[in-house]
Image 1 (cartoon, rainbow, N blue to C red):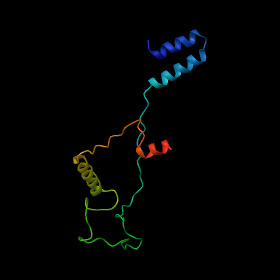
Image 2 (cartoon, helix red, strand yellow):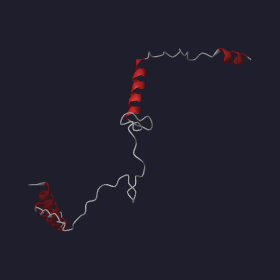
Image 3 (cartoon, rainbow, N blue to C red):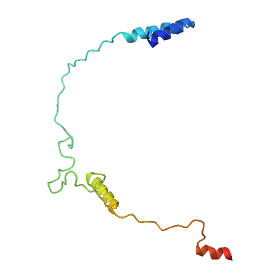
Image 4 (tube, helix red, strand yellow):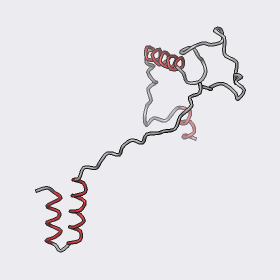
Length: 122
């Protein structure tokens, strides 16, 4: 006996007939396989146009193309957060890890510093 069938029996035994009927309807609905909808076939003709990225309405370029000397390529740009900057950050981090750790000066707890000791005596 499944959990759902047990729930229906408990609902009927406790007098919740309407709730038991609802659970049974849901069980039957879930048990029935739902038919897959057929994909819609379009009869419209779609005209394919060449890409217009970077072109204005009159087919002129928005910005002139960069020359070989002007274009740095991937990994060479030095502004923003790019590949170069990621490498630079990792290189700096690795260099910092290689440095020896500086030990902080010892701090004595509970002792009054000499400059404050004079103020306390006065």
